[in-house]
Image 1 (cartoon, rainbow, N blue to C red):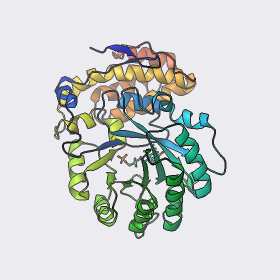
Image 2: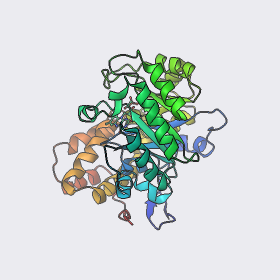
Image 3: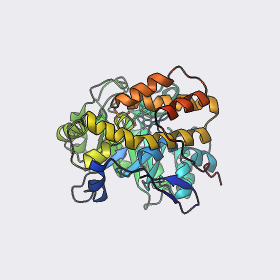
Image 4: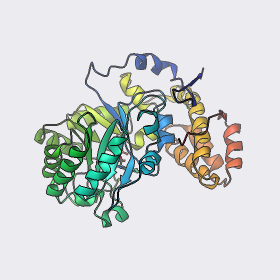
Length: 365
Ligand SMILES: Cc1cc2nc3c(=O)[nH]c(=O)nc-3n(C[C@H](O)[C@H](O)[C@H](O)COP(=O)(O)O)c2cc1C
């Protein structure tokens, strides 16, 4: 049964039960005993605080990283960071208790220093640097993956940010393999780690690769051999079997899940439970029953967060990814894809068994 309780700051949220077969192992996670870390990837335009709350409701992730905060020439106000990471108001944790690291994207070391200092004053659970974004608008302004031909600049950014952020707050960097090829991947990784990034997340594709499979996990192994800090593998992990292959090829323990986590909200729990086979139809049906309240809480939070005209798109976006794994999501997506208004979408969700939980509007204090 889904239960309700109050957070320290007075907000009520819904606790989402895990499907029975996953619940027991999660209560005794093997984190620590195996050295396994599972991270939830930053995904701008998809994985905001609302979806982070849904995907971390049952634990499973060691930390999650926010969408990037773009730093370009100005000192961003505190409210900007709080908008990207509302979790900063609750100890930089999601409601399920998962630590939230905040990502910065920029190319000017001095400006990155000042913004990192401001961010650090809000006590994030960690700070991450983005050297992977392939978006033309970002790259035109020398941000994200565009810097992967300039290892010396990467180093200066890492040094500047590390100097601004107290040692008690971890600093990581997330990089692709390069712009057109991986020729300078190792130089970039060394520049970042020697500059003070304590963990490197490697999205194992170049900017030119975009999001096309495959991810070149063998490059994660090469980078791991060349740096002294922990390396996290990322890219194309959609199932527990992918996770196992990714670890085998990359040779690293830790993996960051991106789209696969959104498409399969119980993927982390299944990996932690050691259940590496794909769930059968019966198990998917059990999981879907456990997902319905998550989807209901998500819809309700979206309704409070965004303008009504944008809310249907957010619900469709998640269902579209869930449809990769759940036939029930395919049916629900088909039922709502042409609906325009939130009221119409809510009606269809109700008819498909999605509950409408009462959620307190988020605090903006
Ligand atoms: C919609 C979308 C938005 C993304 N936004 C960010 C971002 O803000 N910062 C970042 O470092 N990576 C971002 N990424 C990249 C992901 O974090 C991840 O590296 C990538 O999706 C590969 O992992 P996957 O194949 O498991 O999805 C984004 C990816 C997607 C699909």
